[in-house]
Length: 345
Image (tube, rainbow, N blue to C red):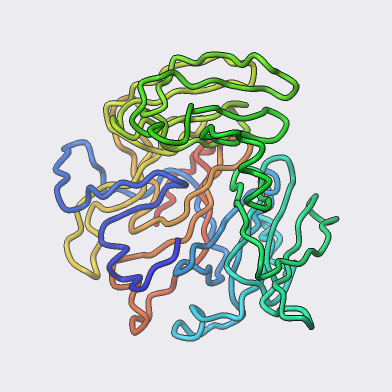
């Protein structure tokens, strides 16, 4: 996420992976709790690049890949230079690659993509792509137009993509699972036609009980071995799509959130002031009640492969988004599968 004014972006909004909620001004839910978190919280102690998007990814259940900065002063931190680093929980942080652009991508198949800050001798951009730890360097020439596949962390020449799609709107899944065909490019966003799943080497496709106009966010969760599809028209309606074509519809009374093994996690609450978050926080919904995991604003929240741990950039209060404020913006982790008595934040 890029933004010109980070302060305005954080106005009671939480970005939970790809879902967003901005309830802080209006929420009066009596079940909201301001008590300390019952779950263990770890603070990496390092700045994370929230103004560009921290681009947080889990390598496994103990290691977090993220983009940060060597700068310790807040006003300098936001402008880089940026590094890709690995936080191994309980063991510390080590750098993976120095001097990169805000363009990190990693998926559950172990594919990574990132761009170097410096161009090559001919002025072409340089990016690395491939299996994590074995990626190769490629040129990103100025005269080519590219299609960006976020799901698979790869660039493809736009002309090649147009020929492959033959006039259809496509939503890529992981390469090993195939893609979704939404119908003709023109009009698919309002089409009531049902989308089709095309698995690798599958020429017929599988019709799914999901209309093209309902498709909004599509994200793969390793712990579920399935894709969560969000309805762009009705935020309280979701589907789990499994790679074999099986579909489960999910109805959530509280709206969009981030799935974990313990239930949905979302951001809500009402702030008392720019320096006091009040009941604002990241909450776990359990048995119809909201359990606050941490006070303040959680940005770029991502869930671990086992569905238990949440990594995110944390703003303790609203003004911490201001470059002139001294509030620290750090990378943190919460384990919602392990309760911890008398632990608060």
